[in-house]
Image (cartoon, rainbow, N blue to C red):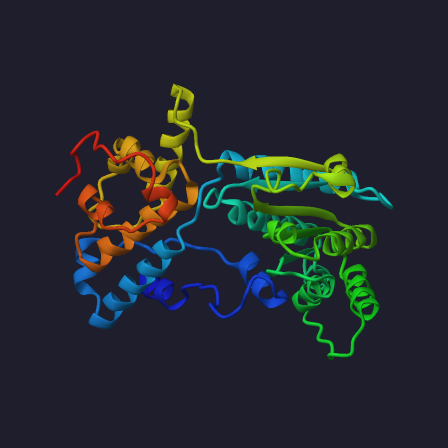
Length: 353
Protein backbone atom coordinates (compact mmCIF):
# COMPACT_ATOMS: atom_id res chain seq x y z
CA UNK A 1 0.00 0.00 0.00
CA UNK A 2 2.76 2.43 0.88
CA UNK A 3 4.57 1.81 -2.41
CA UNK A 4 1.42 2.32 -4.48
CA UNK A 5 0.50 5.52 -2.67
CA UNK A 6 4.06 6.81 -3.04
CA UNK A 7 3.89 6.27 -6.79
CA UNK A 8 0.62 8.18 -6.98
CA UNK A 9 2.21 11.05 -5.06
CA UNK A 10 5.16 11.28 -7.45
CA UNK A 11 3.59 11.08 -10.90
CA UNK A 12 6.05 12.86 -13.19
CA UNK A 13 4.30 15.09 -15.74
CA UNK A 14 5.50 17.48 -18.40
CA UNK A 15 4.40 21.02 -17.59
CA UNK A 16 1.76 21.81 -20.26
CA UNK A 17 2.67 25.48 -20.47
CA UNK A 18 6.35 24.98 -21.32
CA UNK A 19 7.01 24.57 -25.02
CA UNK A 20 9.77 22.35 -26.36
CA UNK A 21 11.05 25.45 -28.15
CA UNK A 22 12.28 26.86 -24.83
CA UNK A 23 15.26 25.65 -22.84
CA UNK A 24 13.10 24.92 -19.78
CA UNK A 25 10.47 23.04 -21.75
CA UNK A 26 13.05 21.02 -23.64
CA UNK A 27 14.89 20.11 -20.43
CA UNK A 28 11.67 18.87 -18.84
CA UNK A 29 11.01 16.78 -21.95
CA UNK A 30 14.48 15.25 -21.81
CA UNK A 31 14.18 14.44 -18.11
CA UNK A 32 10.61 13.17 -18.28
CA UNK A 33 10.14 9.45 -17.64
CA UNK A 34 6.67 8.10 -18.28
CA UNK A 35 6.69 5.41 -15.59
CA UNK A 36 3.70 3.06 -15.77
CA UNK A 37 1.50 3.14 -12.66
CA UNK A 38 1.32 0.00 -10.56
CA UNK A 39 -1.92 -1.94 -11.07
CA UNK A 40 -3.10 -3.05 -7.61
CA UNK A 41 -4.70 -6.40 -7.01
CA UNK A 42 -8.46 -6.56 -6.43
CA UNK A 43 -7.87 -6.71 -2.68
CA UNK A 44 -5.46 -3.76 -2.74
CA UNK A 45 -7.89 -1.72 -4.87
CA UNK A 46 -10.73 -2.38 -2.45
CA UNK A 47 -8.58 -1.30 0.48
CA UNK A 48 -7.66 2.02 -1.10
CA UNK A 49 -9.41 5.15 0.12
CA UNK A 50 -11.75 6.97 -2.25
CA UNK A 51 -9.14 9.67 -2.73
CA UNK A 52 -6.40 7.15 -3.49
CA UNK A 53 -8.62 5.39 -6.04
CA UNK A 54 -9.38 8.71 -7.72
CA UNK A 55 -5.68 9.55 -7.82
CA UNK A 56 -4.90 6.15 -9.35
CA UNK A 57 -7.54 6.68 -12.03
CA UNK A 58 -6.09 10.10 -12.88
CA UNK A 59 -2.53 8.73 -12.88
CA UNK A 60 -3.55 6.04 -15.37
CA UNK A 61 -5.39 8.58 -17.53
CA UNK A 62 -2.28 10.74 -17.62
CA UNK A 63 -0.03 7.78 -18.34
CA UNK A 64 -2.13 6.54 -21.28
CA UNK A 65 -2.48 10.06 -22.67
CA UNK A 66 1.31 10.15 -22.85
CA UNK A 67 1.80 6.49 -23.76
CA UNK A 68 5.42 5.82 -24.79
CA UNK A 69 5.81 5.18 -28.50
CA UNK A 70 7.91 2.26 -29.66
CA UNK A 71 10.96 2.85 -31.82
CA UNK A 72 9.63 2.61 -35.35
CA UNK A 73 11.94 1.89 -38.33
CA UNK A 74 12.01 5.64 -39.08
CA UNK A 75 13.04 6.51 -35.53
CA UNK A 76 15.72 3.82 -35.53
CA UNK A 77 17.12 5.05 -38.84
CA UNK A 78 17.13 8.67 -37.67
CA UNK A 79 18.89 7.74 -34.42
CA UNK A 80 21.53 5.70 -36.24
CA UNK A 81 22.15 8.37 -38.87
CA UNK A 82 22.14 11.14 -36.27
CA UNK A 83 24.71 9.47 -34.04
CA UNK A 84 26.98 8.87 -37.03
CA UNK A 85 26.74 12.44 -38.34
CA UNK A 86 27.35 14.00 -34.93
CA UNK A 87 30.52 11.93 -34.66
CA UNK A 88 31.68 12.73 -38.20
CA UNK A 89 31.01 16.45 -37.76
CA UNK A 90 33.11 16.77 -34.62
CA UNK A 91 36.13 18.84 -35.47
CA UNK A 92 34.74 19.93 -38.86
CA UNK A 93 35.18 23.64 -39.43
CA UNK A 94 32.65 23.91 -42.27
CA UNK A 95 30.60 21.84 -44.72
CA UNK A 96 29.15 19.75 -41.92
CA UNK A 97 26.72 17.05 -42.96
CA UNK A 98 23.09 17.05 -41.87
CA UNK A 99 19.85 15.20 -42.45
CA UNK A 100 16.29 15.95 -43.46
CA UNK A 101 13.29 13.92 -42.33
CA UNK A 102 10.50 14.33 -44.87
CA UNK A 103 7.07 12.79 -45.23
CA UNK A 104 3.33 13.29 -45.09
CA UNK A 105 1.58 14.65 -42.04
CA UNK A 106 0.96 12.07 -39.31
CA UNK A 107 3.93 9.84 -40.08
CA UNK A 108 5.75 10.64 -36.84
CA UNK A 109 8.31 13.21 -38.00
CA UNK A 110 8.21 15.43 -34.92
CA UNK A 111 8.21 12.40 -32.63
CA UNK A 112 11.28 11.01 -34.38
CA UNK A 113 13.09 14.37 -34.40
CA UNK A 114 12.49 15.04 -30.70
CA UNK A 115 13.41 11.46 -29.82
CA UNK A 116 16.74 11.99 -31.58
CA UNK A 117 17.35 15.11 -29.51
CA UNK A 118 16.36 13.49 -26.23
CA UNK A 119 18.53 10.42 -26.88
CA UNK A 120 21.54 12.57 -27.75
CA UNK A 121 21.18 14.89 -24.76
CA UNK A 122 20.84 11.99 -22.35
CA UNK A 123 24.01 10.47 -23.81
CA UNK A 124 25.83 13.77 -23.31
CA UNK A 125 24.69 13.92 -19.70
CA UNK A 126 26.04 10.44 -19.09
CA UNK A 127 29.42 11.51 -20.45
CA UNK A 128 29.35 14.70 -18.35
CA UNK A 129 27.62 13.90 -15.05
CA UNK A 130 26.87 16.42 -12.34
CA UNK A 131 27.25 20.15 -12.71
CA UNK A 132 29.34 19.85 -15.87
CA UNK A 133 26.41 18.22 -17.65
CA UNK A 134 23.81 20.63 -16.28
CA UNK A 135 25.73 23.62 -17.63
CA UNK A 136 25.66 22.16 -21.14
CA UNK A 137 22.86 22.75 -23.65
CA UNK A 138 23.85 20.21 -26.32
CA UNK A 139 20.55 20.32 -28.22
CA UNK A 140 18.47 23.20 -29.57
CA UNK A 141 14.95 22.63 -30.86
CA UNK A 142 13.17 25.31 -32.89
CA UNK A 143 10.23 25.42 -35.28
CA UNK A 144 10.11 27.59 -38.38
CA UNK A 145 7.30 30.17 -38.05
CA UNK A 146 4.73 30.65 -40.80
CA UNK A 147 5.75 33.46 -43.20
CA UNK A 148 9.17 33.42 -41.59
CA UNK A 149 11.75 36.15 -42.14
CA UNK A 150 15.47 35.82 -41.40
CA UNK A 151 15.04 37.87 -38.23
CA UNK A 152 12.10 35.75 -37.06
CA UNK A 153 14.20 32.63 -37.48
CA UNK A 154 17.08 34.16 -35.50
CA UNK A 155 14.67 35.20 -32.74
CA UNK A 156 13.45 31.58 -32.48
CA UNK A 157 17.01 30.48 -31.68
CA UNK A 158 17.32 33.27 -29.12
CA UNK A 159 13.96 32.38 -27.57
CA UNK A 160 15.11 28.81 -26.98
CA UNK A 161 18.03 30.13 -24.96
CA UNK A 162 15.82 32.59 -23.11
CA UNK A 163 17.60 35.60 -24.57
CA UNK A 164 15.35 38.60 -25.18
CA UNK A 165 16.02 41.57 -27.45
CA UNK A 166 14.42 44.95 -27.85
CA UNK A 167 12.69 46.03 -31.04
CA UNK A 168 15.83 47.92 -32.11
CA UNK A 169 18.08 44.87 -32.00
CA UNK A 170 19.77 44.19 -35.32
CA UNK A 171 20.27 40.85 -37.00
CA UNK A 172 24.01 40.83 -36.22
CA UNK A 173 23.19 41.50 -32.55
CA UNK A 174 20.85 38.51 -32.37
CA UNK A 175 22.99 36.12 -34.41
CA UNK A 176 26.22 36.95 -32.59
CA UNK A 177 24.58 36.52 -29.21
CA UNK A 178 23.05 33.18 -30.20
CA UNK A 179 26.38 31.91 -31.51
CA UNK A 180 28.22 33.05 -28.38
CA UNK A 181 25.72 31.29 -26.09
CA UNK A 182 25.83 28.14 -28.25
CA UNK A 183 29.61 27.98 -28.08
CA UNK A 184 29.66 28.56 -24.33
CA UNK A 185 27.07 25.82 -23.68
CA UNK A 186 28.63 23.25 -26.05
CA UNK A 187 25.91 22.95 -28.69
CA UNK A 188 26.16 19.72 -30.73
CA UNK A 189 22.76 19.15 -32.37
CA UNK A 190 20.24 21.59 -33.87
CA UNK A 191 16.71 20.31 -34.55
CA UNK A 192 14.58 22.42 -36.87
CA UNK A 193 10.96 21.38 -37.26
CA UNK A 194 8.36 22.56 -39.79
CA UNK A 195 11.14 23.26 -42.29
CA UNK A 196 8.56 23.27 -45.09
CA UNK A 197 7.44 26.71 -43.83
CA UNK A 198 10.63 28.13 -45.34
CA UNK A 199 9.60 26.81 -48.75
CA UNK A 200 6.21 28.52 -48.48
CA UNK A 201 7.40 31.96 -47.43
CA UNK A 202 7.96 34.96 -49.67
CA UNK A 203 11.40 35.49 -48.17
CA UNK A 204 12.39 31.92 -48.97
CA UNK A 205 15.85 32.70 -50.34
CA UNK A 206 16.75 35.05 -47.48
CA UNK A 207 15.54 32.66 -44.77
CA UNK A 208 17.36 29.77 -46.42
CA UNK A 209 20.56 31.83 -46.49
CA UNK A 210 20.13 32.73 -42.82
CA UNK A 211 19.76 29.07 -41.93
CA UNK A 212 22.88 28.25 -43.94
CA UNK A 213 24.73 31.01 -42.09
CA UNK A 214 23.72 29.50 -38.75
CA UNK A 215 24.91 26.10 -39.97
CA UNK A 216 28.29 27.62 -40.80
CA UNK A 217 28.62 29.53 -37.53
CA UNK A 218 27.29 26.94 -35.10
CA UNK A 219 29.55 23.92 -34.45
CA UNK A 220 26.68 21.46 -34.61
CA UNK A 221 24.88 18.87 -36.71
CA UNK A 222 21.64 20.15 -38.22
CA UNK A 223 18.56 17.92 -38.55
CA UNK A 224 15.42 19.16 -40.30
CA UNK A 225 11.88 17.77 -40.40
CA UNK A 226 9.11 18.88 -42.73
CA UNK A 227 6.18 17.88 -44.89
CA UNK A 228 7.16 16.45 -48.28
CA UNK A 229 10.05 18.87 -48.74
CA UNK A 230 11.37 17.25 -51.91
CA UNK A 231 8.05 17.72 -53.69
CA UNK A 232 7.95 21.33 -52.48
CA UNK A 233 11.26 22.11 -54.17
CA UNK A 234 13.70 21.83 -51.28
CA UNK A 235 16.46 20.67 -53.61
CA UNK A 236 15.67 22.93 -56.58
CA UNK A 237 17.98 25.65 -57.81
CA UNK A 238 21.53 26.48 -56.71
CA UNK A 239 20.63 26.62 -53.01
CA UNK A 240 18.72 23.38 -53.27
CA UNK A 241 21.59 21.60 -54.96
CA UNK A 242 23.92 22.72 -52.19
CA UNK A 243 21.51 21.33 -49.57
CA UNK A 244 21.22 18.07 -51.52
CA UNK A 245 25.00 17.75 -51.49
CA UNK A 246 25.25 18.05 -47.72
CA UNK A 247 22.08 16.53 -46.31
CA UNK A 248 20.88 12.95 -46.10
CA UNK A 249 17.19 12.57 -46.90
CA UNK A 250 15.21 10.17 -44.71
CA UNK A 251 11.66 9.36 -45.80
CA UNK A 252 9.02 9.24 -43.08
CA UNK A 253 6.26 7.12 -44.58
CA UNK A 254 3.28 5.17 -43.25
CA UNK A 255 3.86 1.51 -42.54
CA UNK A 256 3.65 -0.79 -45.55
CA UNK A 257 1.37 -3.80 -45.28
CA UNK A 258 1.89 -5.67 -48.51
CA UNK A 259 4.28 -8.44 -47.48
CA UNK A 260 4.52 -10.88 -44.56
CA UNK A 261 7.55 -8.94 -43.31
CA UNK A 262 5.58 -5.69 -43.31
CA UNK A 263 2.70 -7.30 -41.45
CA UNK A 264 5.07 -8.79 -38.89
CA UNK A 265 6.61 -5.35 -38.24
CA UNK A 266 3.15 -3.79 -37.86
CA UNK A 267 2.02 -6.49 -35.44
CA UNK A 268 5.24 -6.08 -33.47
CA UNK A 269 4.58 -2.37 -33.10
CA UNK A 270 1.03 -3.03 -31.91
CA UNK A 271 2.27 -5.66 -29.46
CA UNK A 272 4.73 -3.18 -27.98
CA UNK A 273 2.02 -0.58 -27.52
CA UNK A 274 -0.36 -3.15 -26.06
CA UNK A 275 2.26 -4.36 -23.59
CA UNK A 276 2.53 -0.83 -22.20
CA UNK A 277 -1.21 -0.62 -21.35
CA UNK A 278 -2.25 -0.50 -17.70
CA UNK A 279 -5.89 -1.62 -17.80
CA UNK A 280 -7.45 -3.98 -15.25
CA UNK A 281 -9.37 -6.27 -17.63
CA UNK A 282 -7.62 -5.98 -21.00
CA UNK A 283 -6.63 -9.34 -22.46
CA UNK A 284 -3.08 -9.35 -23.89
CA UNK A 285 -3.05 -10.08 -27.60
CA UNK A 286 -6.48 -8.57 -28.27
CA UNK A 287 -5.05 -5.63 -30.22
CA UNK A 288 -2.55 -7.77 -32.12
CA UNK A 289 -5.43 -9.90 -33.33
CA UNK A 290 -7.00 -6.72 -34.71
CA UNK A 291 -3.88 -5.75 -36.70
CA UNK A 292 -5.78 -5.67 -40.01
CA UNK A 293 -8.51 -3.47 -38.55
CA UNK A 294 -5.97 -1.12 -37.00
CA UNK A 295 -4.08 -0.83 -40.27
CA UNK A 296 -7.17 -0.12 -42.33
CA UNK A 297 -8.39 2.35 -39.72
CA UNK A 298 -5.13 4.34 -39.65
CA UNK A 299 -3.64 3.74 -43.10
CA UNK A 300 -0.42 2.72 -41.35
CA UNK A 301 0.19 6.24 -39.99
CA UNK A 302 1.95 5.98 -36.67
CA UNK A 303 0.40 9.23 -35.41
CA UNK A 304 -3.12 7.96 -36.06
CA UNK A 305 -2.36 4.60 -34.46
CA UNK A 306 -1.05 6.32 -31.34
CA UNK A 307 -4.15 8.50 -31.05
CA UNK A 308 -6.43 5.49 -31.60
CA UNK A 309 -4.89 3.30 -28.90
CA UNK A 310 -4.26 6.08 -26.39
CA UNK A 311 -7.79 7.40 -26.83
CA UNK A 312 -9.35 3.96 -26.43
CA UNK A 313 -7.31 3.33 -23.28
CA UNK A 314 -8.48 6.59 -21.71
CA UNK A 315 -12.12 5.81 -22.58
CA UNK A 316 -11.75 2.30 -21.16
CA UNK A 317 -10.72 3.85 -17.85
CA UNK A 318 -13.45 6.47 -17.88
CA UNK A 319 -16.30 4.05 -18.67
CA UNK A 320 -14.80 1.48 -16.25
CA UNK A 321 -14.77 -1.33 -18.83
CA UNK A 322 -10.96 -1.47 -18.41
CA UNK A 323 -10.38 -3.16 -21.77
CA UNK A 324 -10.02 -2.04 -25.38
CA UNK A 325 -12.63 -3.54 -27.71
CA UNK A 326 -13.61 -2.90 -31.31
CA UNK A 327 -16.70 -1.01 -30.19
CA UNK A 328 -14.50 1.28 -28.13
CA UNK A 329 -12.01 1.76 -30.96
CA UNK A 330 -14.89 2.71 -33.27
CA UNK A 331 -15.66 5.65 -30.99
CA UNK A 332 -12.25 7.29 -31.35
CA UNK A 333 -12.25 10.10 -33.94
CA UNK A 334 -9.21 10.24 -36.20
CA UNK A 335 -7.76 12.80 -38.57
CA UNK A 336 -9.23 13.33 -42.03
CA UNK A 337 -6.34 11.58 -43.77
CA UNK A 338 -6.94 8.40 -41.79
CA UNK A 339 -10.72 8.51 -42.21
CA UNK A 340 -10.51 9.05 -45.97
CA UNK A 341 -8.57 5.82 -46.59
CA UNK A 342 -10.07 2.45 -47.57
CA UNK A 343 -13.29 1.70 -45.61
CA UNK A 344 -12.61 -0.48 -42.60
CA UNK A 345 -13.54 -4.16 -42.81
CA UNK A 346 -13.54 -6.03 -39.51
CA UNK A 347 -11.37 -9.13 -39.83
CA UNK A 348 -12.55 -10.64 -36.58
CA UNK A 349 -15.05 -9.92 -33.86
CA UNK A 350 -12.95 -11.35 -31.04
CA UNK A 351 -12.74 -8.79 -28.25
CA UNK A 352 -15.93 -7.00 -29.31
CA UNK A 353 -18.47 -6.40 -26.58
